[in-house]
Amino acid sequence: MSKKFLQEFIICLEKQPAIWHAKCEAYKNKNLRNTAWEVLLEKYKEIDEDATIDTVKKKVNSLRASYRRELLKVRRSAGTDDVYQPNLWYFSELSFLHETESSVDGITSFDDRQENERPKAPKRKHDESSEFLQKTVGHLDNINGKQPKCEADIYAEGWAAMFKQLSKEQKLFAKKGIDELLMQGRMNMLTYQGVSSIANIPNKINIKKKENSSWRACSPICSPTCSPVDGLP
Image 1 (spheres, rainbow, N blue to C red):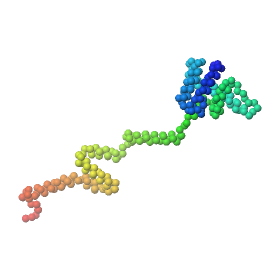
Image 2: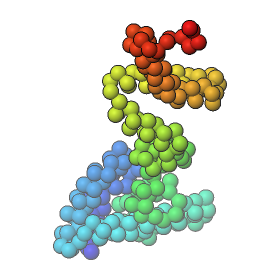
Image 3: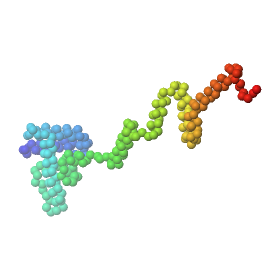
Image 4: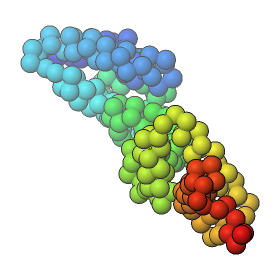
């Protein structure tokens, strides 16, 4: 690489602050940074047609590392009788990097620094998001039927199946009876005798019908030979 081309390349780099100026708005924009690298690549291809973005990045990072090593030597010699004089011929050409390089400890690449300067989300916010996600997944699992059915769910499904088979009139009666039983249960008023009496209602009705039928059969109007009152002369 000739001295003339390197000077031109450094000038081109200086015109692309999106790559090296951390306080520049363009530096925070990934698209603008990529565009800046493309400009440098186009320049670099004047001496290497097969060059890629990675090739250019390695060259830029190499220039930066060399500049920073010289800069550190100058700073360390400050205040002494023998102030260090940079031997790098393009040291002054890279003076636009002075502020950036002075504020960074250790020799890292431009890409490393850009990754490190990305704002990190607070840990608490991450924890809250994870907790919300877990609750949401748990709720969806319950909706999808992954939670075991309880006894009440099983009984309710059975009652619903029988209720659908009733006529419209019988549904009204059944609903009224079930509502009353549940209300009494919530008030701790249900007893075994009370529930049994409800279950025996059809039997009582049949017995009463039979008694009425027998009475009509023994009526004087129906049968003159049968006395309605036993023991009378």
